[in-house]
Image 1: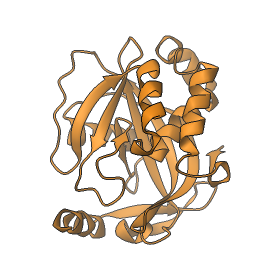
Image 2: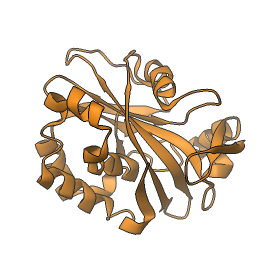
Image 3: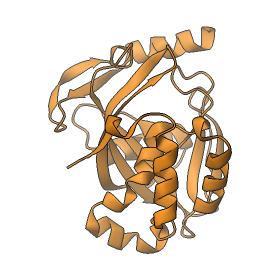
Image 4: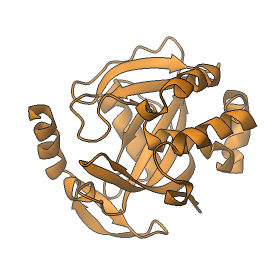
Length: 223
């Protein structure tokens, strides 16, 4: 409980960008108020780092997190600040959370709304970013943000999701399920990296796992 109180204090001190359903900025609000109880629609991002073999970097959220503590996430998830783009915010956050710098590219964005137990909820338009790092990259875990890091292939992730889909953050699963909807230029640029992730059975598995958290009508691609 003390750990979660510290997380809430940090959230109160941070502001996020409020948006409408077309992702137009309409104001700002304290981060904590955007996550309690049903949340206010705001801008966020999820960043996915891959190596040249197509393995994805997964991170386990800190047990201190108020929402989805100790669950597996994509590489980095956070919120753009005023004046930042999705890509620039992800590039800022990478060294802060993982101790690495990486050029990011924008893939697509989606809206979703999902509660977490009786604690709070996520109500976001979430940009999805992609970057490539070498498999020998040395990451560092920032206390209070990440408790574990691992590389994973689509086959390995499907096996783990089949066993415990509830231990994977819903926004990560949505991002992976919507990979085929990425900008065409990015699908071409990263075709060799994403080929296995774009297989229809992989996309279907990600979609099915997402529905363990929230029904299909609670998430959508934003164009």
